[in-house]
Length: 229
Image 1 (cartoon, rainbow, N blue to C red):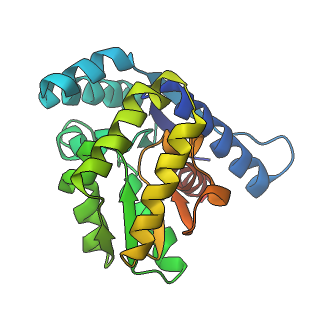
Image 2: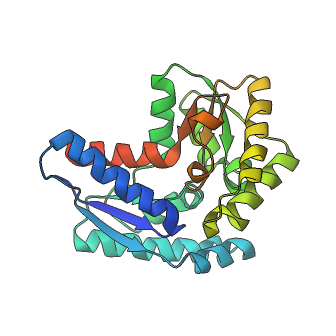
């Protein structure tokens, strides 16, 4: 079994899901008393959130590269970054380590294409929805990506940072997300990516008029699959 180097804490609520899904997947694959070999580096999300607010992405790259180097030195075979937004920094982190990073967009694209969908809606932080580090990777895989309008991007982002990252799950916010997903279906989306590791706390398949692709669940399951190869 390979050893996963898991960088968590962004936020810790979604990291719990990663740990649970990876271990459940390993148990289902190998049976018996098997569980996952995981080395975890959990960051202080306040430091990274402050850097994001100030546009200091180099500061976050330094934090995550250092975490990756420590995990590599400790014996991890590959890195899993338990968040979507910080995949913006993958190119910088990769320069600092000699082990691969399992990219969350690649795992998600494979799941979507396996189901035969081509036109997909993307929800996430404002960084994920407006910048190319996730979106372009999906496009390069052959998918067409639909993004919400400016007002909906602001709503989705504010709910993530002001509520979900603080562990607050509100029915009123669920209704807002459901309405946004419905509008994206009307634009031709065949499914929706929950492209922030906290959105799954708020939205599940029963809440969506579109097939849901939760990047947290997909990324974690793919990590376990690779681990057990």
